[in-house]
Length: 168
Image (cartoon, rainbow, N blue to C red; front, side, top):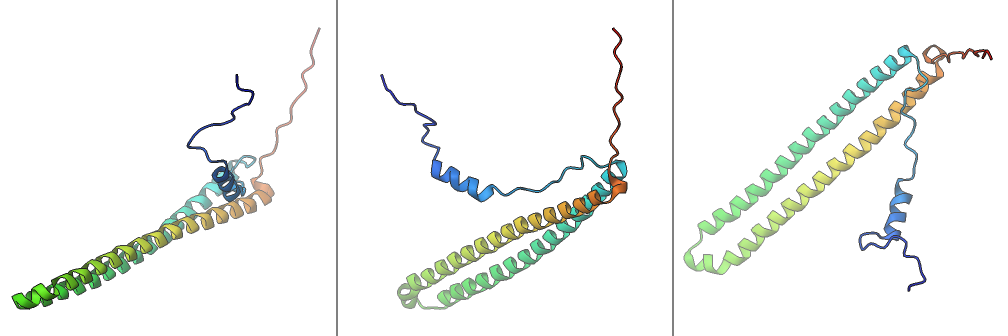
């Protein structure tokens, strides 16, 4: 009989990676709850959140449009270069085609790989922008919520509890 305790034994669990994940994500997210606010305060918080959400969506949409334009422009440039190489190949004699076909095909393949790499890079930039923008607007919302909480007219007044006398 074994005299040891096997804690979490799984091929999918890596304690080092779990610790890295914990260290990376341990920051507090901020208070986003409207608890403690009266109806007027909750309405103000809702309005602020809607405004910030629409502003964030517009900023991200604008960046996405810019990204799409850059992506299309780059794609068109690459396609133009590929087309010119193909035209060059078509205008060659049979002897020249045999001689240069592999080199031109390699150039085309390199252009395609470069295009794929650039598009992936642009996509990653957009993904990072979205993440950063969401975090920024979450911070703005928490900040605005703190401002609302600091105004006494938006704070819910606690109800006084009455003590019931028990008759025995």
